Image (cartoon, rainbow, N blue to C red; front, side):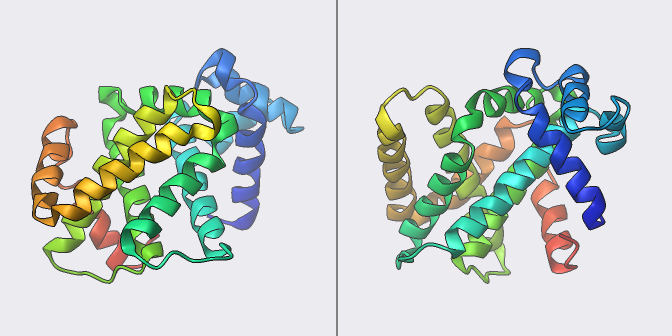
Length: 220
């Protein structure tokens, strides 16, 4: 994707985020975003030809990039793996804190059967970006189990965060620490958690394998 195309999509998405809490992830919200960004309504379709689900996935990809950028810029880098993962998840959620309703609606949209594969790709890419930022270089079965583990922790944390009304989301961060403590204390359960994730989300077979092939081919 060219830089111009990327900027074009970002401009429409950023403007549409003001409408999504009221209109949902809909063509109407994207069209309103296009107009607010100074484009004709039809450009919403040009930016996201596959519709609102593509826009929600793009929103997730942008959040991934912002998460990694914020992590790299941390003044004090965590030393332990668990602390690095916790910092990345927290940075990602803090980065979309003002877009919580858009995140909630996006989760709902990408969990629909017709969008499940797209939603899984977004989730798997988030998990992969977290581990790459941590410095993971595994290439055996651990590549799958680590990403499945983080994906499971991430999904449960986001679900908790969406309903958290505590100041500064402090209850969410405590929840995240507990989930990561469990995961790191019992690493042998990683495969079990990965299997549970695969069994509970439609059409997950092959998603992580396909994404690993793309990573190895440097296609993202």
